[in-house]
Length: 342
Image 1: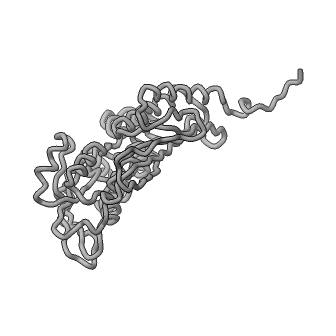
Image 2 (image 1 turned 135 degrees about the vertical axis):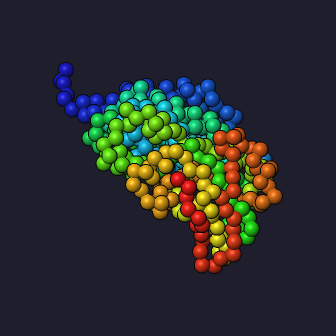
Image 3 (image 1 turned 45 degrees about the vertical axis):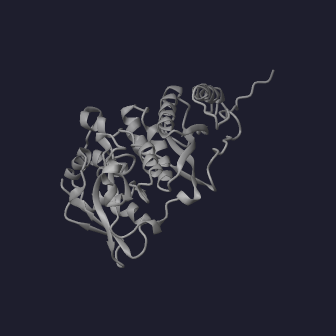
């Protein structure tokens, strides 16, 4: 029998390892199926039923990744939280439209299938879906030798949600004298890591030997689904913003209607310790504000009379607080007052 030296496996792609990983996900998912989803894992495409009772449903979709936070996970050899980040970055964006997340799909590309690493990642994705009350219905794992250096990989996620057309958030719903409430983040979330890694490199900081950074840099992005959907059901909010790359100025501007302005008191922001650490390494206030969430992971707009009502939907760690209000102003979308309290 003639022997052939060129095979897919010899070129660096292990189909059997990839198939084993798919089977692992399928077994994991079979325990968590719900009435709306078929057993999709391993099929060519995923199938999901639209929930009943939704009048004039609109589908809302979002896709995102976790950026160079992956490099921190590689340095610390800890992969059980970035899957949560991946789900959070997608479903939190869906919330901004007033939509409930339904399904999630992931894409993992890697130099060589490492089952231990990938199982850890997928457990995080599954946990993120559980927190978001949505289903992991499929995905893709691509082994790509020669594209990534040894041990390197990347993640992307896609989420789909649903909202009744009359409940879709609109800019026109935000009015003068409405207040802006900040929900705390639990740290960096998934933004600004290229700047952080630059600091680590130039300051020659070994994160494996720094207990504070080991704890802070891989904290998973907070998922706000449960709390925000509760506020929506209570008709307590009429606009919100996910504070990601671009910080408060880059994300709040997306929801502000013409002729009014978000008047923000920077001194009211409850800055998290990790941002104070970054600031001390030599980053300007302006750069901090436009790069990081500074401790504000999500904002929502409500009436002053609702302050006490909305607080009851949050535990102590994520209790929202007022950082500003909307005023008449045709020239500016946002005004920042006072200074950040470092």
